[in-house]
Length: 114
Image 1 (tube, rainbow, N blue to C red):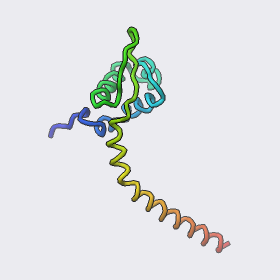
Image 2: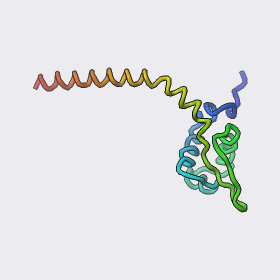
Image 3: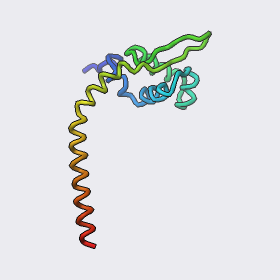
Image 4: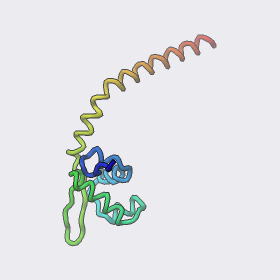
């Protein structure tokens, strides 16, 4: 079975850990490829490959300043991921509330045993 292209959408693009690392770095501000290479500790062709994928799904914008290309985050395509994850927030909140109740009950039992 053929593998889905990683450039299909933001979900596939951010599935790769190094691409998420690039997004994290760009969330701090604009950076050149040289800056990203230094921060990530990987070779330039690999950083460029990941930047190309991120550009193709619209997560990264680029502008030229003289001979230098500066990359910046475009968070708009992340909205689809945020909306999808947000749907699970109620479930997580409920489970964390239940866990908190159990922890409090265990603390009370422990304190009464002393």
